[in-house]
Image (cartoon, rainbow, N blue to C red):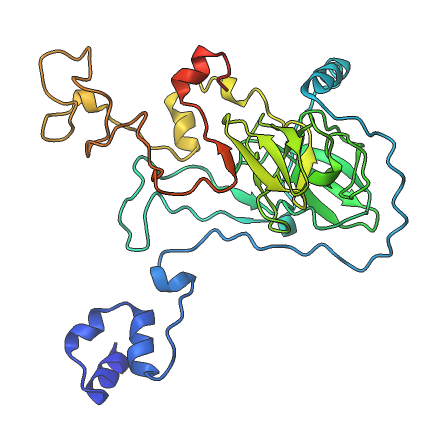
Length: 355
């Protein structure tokens, strides 16, 4: 503190400067000619960012010639259901052990707060310690066979992940499809077979196949269809784009140079889980929430009254924003590669296509 006071007196700064955050004071006083750059600690002294780095898995290992493609037919949902019936005797079990330390990092809890420490997302906080898995969404190692060692639970996502080992011994995590089992062989190649777990560009995947982990831009890594039990269906393909129907019923186009993985993702029964007690939500990092109907009129639009059987108006947030059916996309925004927006929830239930 004495050094800061001397620096403030040297540069003729007011004493209020001493109350400013330390990184900003270092920039303005101790090194006034430097260029302001942001880092994770400059937002707040207690703030850290969960930034999972991209791990380059290429090691220069000599690659053998890619085997010829033997499975050419489209992998449809009907084929996967038949495969599930064949695998009923060997269900997909997760590994009951510790995660690999070098393929994970500690997850920093923000408790719903922003860089100023103010709550921006309510009902978050606490929970057990978790580790983020470094999942290879890019499937960066091309034309190298990998063997599935085990299927693991991942606390930071809904689907399971699979630990694979390449022929040169490199370990990596990938998203685990529903029919993947330990001992299976997977590969990312343009000439790979159309079987679950393999990764190919969209130009090499036949129409009618179900896929997951789809790239939005070539080389950017998979961004679509990564939640538990989800899949997308390739409807048509033309010279430049593949038209895909997403799980949300949205239909959009993807460049043919984008890569995608075959099959439906695992952990299909996740949404059927019965938690059993309120403490389970606390383990998961969810704090208690009070119903707006039980509040006073000054605290919530649903509050007040002598009856608690109705919400007195369409469901809204404490600030009056509609909870369901409120559209946030601007009508002036161009559709781009989106062919059809996703259908509303009522329409999905009416036509029997709800998730």
